[in-house]
Length: 296
Ligand code: GUN
Image 1 (cartoon, rainbow, N blue to C red):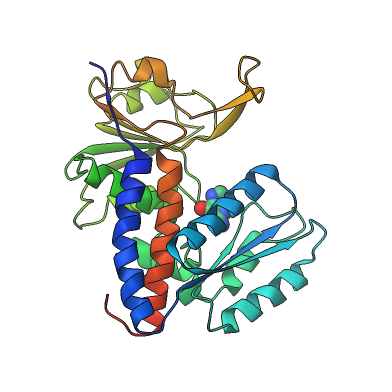
Image 2 (cartoon, helix red, strand yellow):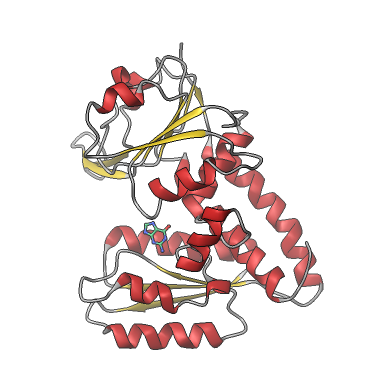
């Protein structure tokens, strides 16, 4: 079997088109959704993500504000920036790019963001709402994965989803979303991780696998079930002398081998990545419509 490729760029474009209609409806009522992105430090990967988020806003006609601060910025200074964004009516969404420099307590920063502007869905209020199935903001990558599954005809209902990885950004929330008693969910979910014994014996039982380990090409063909649906969340820069830039991007899955055994698979790049950004735009539009009590 050669897997069908789940094209994240195409699905993200579909969602972008739907957002354009909603944004036009808001603008007709004098509302322009606004997103603030805060970057502390000079990490090249973070710089590139922040640039992409700014461009995505521009492309959709959203108001965007990017605040870049040096790695030496104090926690107190960053908290003050967040306070001013919380108070700014033009801003409906606040995203602080992670990871932050080590001297800054990430949890303290996330706690300071107004939960109604927390378009990353990282504030404990929104994490709690997600867990009990109440409307809040769903984190972008896990929500994007759910959209990808649904829009590619791979409804997780009744399936065994094996999540490999237990981060607060992907592993734990994607499990919480897919296990909900709700449309696009109702899955049986197992979370495996770096301390899981005999990982392969568990991953081979997954009808759907979400690989979010952060280790290039860690998932090999003998670790998956024949016909499984593979969602590769990894984005690893590996050196490649044959590439023009001297490196290439690869996922957490050995794509070439696994695609011969899976029924569907997401590529890297062009899989989960574009979904994360469009879901951020979607949360920003949702936040603006809630702030202005608009039902769009
Ligand atoms: N760093 C890696 N992924 C993310 C994300 O989804 N949001 C933020 N704020 N930082 C990240």
